Image 1 (cartoon, rainbow, N blue to C red):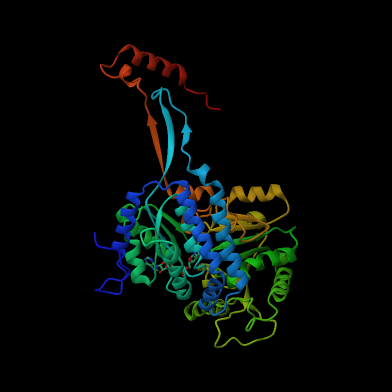
Image 2: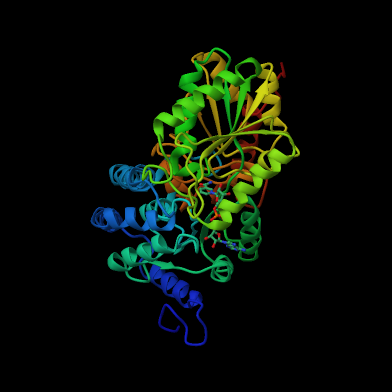
Length: 486
Ligand code: NAD
């Protein structure tokens, strides 16, 4: 096997195969890292995050042209530290083999499940939370005893370079390694025979990635996107709804996979909600152009995409309300005002594509059943937000809808809750990480039966028709009778 190196002599592509081989070899040499080793890795991760806090904030801000420091703190650094603390506390419990029931046919035996590291985990990162979406899967992977290769996004290069530097400082290349690069690198990366692949990105690219992984039968966790609805019940106070939904839309200028994509609002309350939303957003962001609290759009291309949605909606008859309290001009900047779209229809791009920016269509509905029917008629979303103080009704909405996750009377906060799984459903993704589910995702649950010196199998083994076999069949007849179906 050739020695791992970052850049091959022949091309600019990193030598991905050598990197993976080195990691697989190291995983074979230490197949079941003990508790102390895993904690040491998590602690190193914690320290490097704490040491680089200011640099992470600066790098993300550079990538976005401006990113509020508080957003990098709350959306990247804090949930990473929380995630490390979560596994630090529970790792011993998660790692323990679980004793399971021994069925009649295997008795006497000890039956258990062992959670074994899968080996090497590949992690593909999008640009919108360039640290959190690389390191959060890494935390789960390391806790479960794995090694990992991370591919950063070409659209957040300053963050990607810093992540690479941070990981190289604390891990050897055969423990954790970061590769940077564009689609060419990403394509080769996702073709590698990882033991598990976590892809976070668009649904469209997710399909390509799953096909590439299928060639190796590599299991995938796909963290994708979609249009996450926010439904306001008619009894819910509109100023509350506006500020809670607005928080989820203003954060990172709406460039979040779980940002509320559109609002379903009782028809007679659309005007009042529109006013309350403008009011809430004006209070949160009294100015935009030079306001460091308000994040820019990641690239000119993304900005043009979002402007294109607005132009398309306007041309097709929608009303566009740009919330621009100072009446500022944004030419030459990547800032874009929070914008409401009224009268959006299905033939508009803004209702066809995931928005992933500061635009919010408000769709009127007549009855709650109509609102749910609107959601059911569309692909299953990554998140669903429902605003209602009535617990029974909220439970009913949760039971009647499918979404990756959900918040009642809030937005975004389920992602930062470290003890619940995070993941999509259908076109918004598959599989989970975070919490205990994350540990299990990155572990092989190996079922093990351990027999002792007494060989019960020999007593029922051929020649068939022996006494023990007959007893077993008799017992089986007594245990399994046809049931009356009510
Ligand atoms: P993207 O799909 O364009 O890119 C994501 C990653 O995939 C990047 O690292 C990119 O280099 C790589 N990539 C691009 N083309 C590829 C190919 N052909 N083969 C393999 N890899 C390829 O997504 P993006 O624009 O970076 O991020 C925005 C999308 O990500 C949105 O749809 C958003 O909803 C989604 N997202 C989902 C989550 C989640 O947790 N579910 C979180 C953040 C973002």
